[in-house]
Length: 441
Image (cartoon, rainbow, N blue to C red; front, top):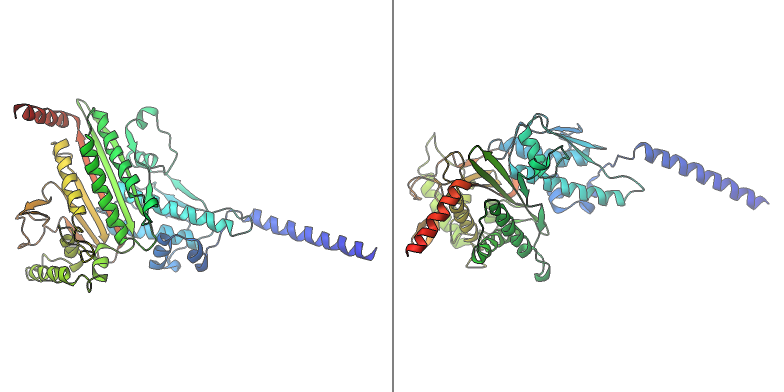
């Protein structure tokens, strides 16, 4: 009898404690406090890396206003700082966080894709963290849309927010979709799959104007993208991932149609310059060559025109035959140059309107390097060179408008931000001209 009474009391105590615990969980069901150990155990390499770079003590507010210009080229420092604050706020602030685009009126696809990759990584982190806690619900990230219709179109296309968009408006853009991969064994290698999907994305974009690529052209695109992804693996954090996404927008004019094609390839980890510095002992022959070139350029510096060592080295490294891994594989150093050359040439072929110009930006560390029709790779003997000046010679300094260094801000990795325009009128004219030339020959 006594034992039964004791058991009844214990059950009542257990039920009381359970109810109290559940009430506490319900009252804080959106709260997950993140500790340093949680980041180490459950976060991806990308998130851990960004947390290590920042200062958790600098954040406190749950609401994050997006800069007016979320674009690396136009607003580098604020853009990089905002991305870092997103990660730090998620880890420091309890409960939901809010990303407010209401005052943002300009975005670049590369900046949005960077934000998208970070939000995806934080979502995975939150789910893993929730599973490790007793019946807690993961953090959520809410998006407040912009007052700008153009920004909201980007947000809807890249799946940031479920905004009211008509079926006709949805037909005006085509999305690649975020894809990821990393260095794995042969069977699991994602580069070939992703490269093929990028080639299909280019093909599907061109089909809007009833044009496309033959099998050789598709294979060429796949091989170029595959080489870029190999470079991304080389520079990424160990066991970290690279990311690819893109979107095409249709611009309708009274008597013409123009498609804006965007592609972003991102890896997090060492910048191009950091990776090169880490291998200078093994890669001493190439390194000495670039040192001499830098000494020649630095002798041309003046109070009104000079460049940081990092930015010039990024330019040098893009040229054929130059790579931080040149000592391991002789073919290294050509893939990125071929990609830039082919991308700019494709942009010139598909559009002659001066309002729409192809542009390829490389964001790496503190540096933003821009390739355009005026500053594009050119043939020099048996190699292609990129000097970023009108003289097309390394005897002169590059143009400071297309090679910029930002002190006090650094992107943790490298981005290839590509944009070209497919002008229906010009594209049809150039295709017809090529067909007539082939007929005559």
